[in-house]
Image (cartoon, rainbow, N blue to C red; front, side):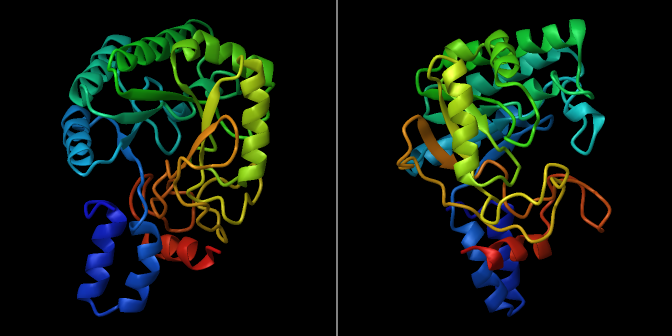
Length: 285
């Protein structure tokens, strides 16, 4: 457990306000290991500090690299590096910061899947993106103790497994340790495992990881991905999944951090939202 996550800091605030029951509820989130997202600001320094602290604690840092140009189709998490050269410099800096320490990196949520849907980059820009992702895999895998999982969407993203596998191959999946599914989504683990197994078969048996951070009550539907009510925390992070080919259940999305300002008074994407966090924790089985 880190005392520096948004959830952990909020536990301290609640205790200071005498709200001990809410603090105890929020501990269901704060007591679990979660991922460190790396974006435009200070990524190299954050990667260095978090991997250093994890190593000192005998743990493995889990990072989410999230800075691809034309990120998120210009939606709630728009942004990213201004151009290809900037991105190559950014990801090289992250790899150098981690150095010889143990780390897992989930690479660019939605980046590959968006090249196959109606809103993402196409043509030359898609080809550039595949090249940047392959470069990122290569740079990160120069580090002996880094594992890399390319994001591969989720079961509700209506894409042909063969098309997605082809796009992942262009994005350097051969050199990666595998792929990640359900990042920041809500699908139940059985469905993610079936989806991942189909994709793995199309990729020659590549392993994968599943984001279980908010999968406890399953999905509210393919269109309900932005802070849907009634969701719950899923399985705790572990590498003991009991499923062949599934390397880990991870909390890739930090539970309680907003998906975006999607019309119910939420804070912007990535900001901690206490009522939502408490709802996820209270609904957990």
